[in-house]
Length: 292
Image: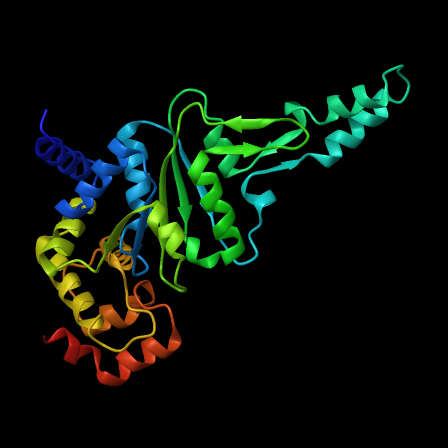
């Protein structure tokens, strides 16, 4: 079967799962599936980077394992930790036995006492290749990024007290970044790359109508036009597609049929998440933005 046909099929499947993608993203996801190389997705907050991994896992009917990155994330939190309380309890139980020190150590440093964190869970998946989502890698520090690069190169993890564990089913890896810092060239070379930008008005409307089938098309058009106008302003946190969908859901719940200045004023917290941005829009005038 030709690759182009497979990409068309992948596009259709993404749409069926409620994810509206362009051909560029579908092609990159196709290559991720074929080549088994990690995929780095960058873009503005709320444009569907994390959702792409969720939908891929749903399409493949496999487990989604998510590692949420943050400042100070270390290897123990990402790979494994020992259950110290359980180990201490086991040692106390063994105190009255004739087991040697070596036997006791071997027992408490066994699989039953190992707490698997996302990376180890992904590598030890038994039934099928999971989707490993390493979310917001730009929030982690460079030291963790270097460690992650080593893991992704070999898909194996060494546990000193036990052994080196190799992946039986190599996971499909998606990393996301909001570009709060520049990632290393070494990590980028290891990955396929995709940038997801804010969608065009037509695509964003399609997303709204697909995810919110009960919404009136005219209200959807008004929502998208207003959001698109906000993104042209110099806001500290422009609304992403996630905010567009949140707002649409809120307006649908409130039974709104159209946008009015009063409706926008009442629900603006769904789309703008800082007081400075809200004040700026209010100063400019919501009615003026609605008139475009």
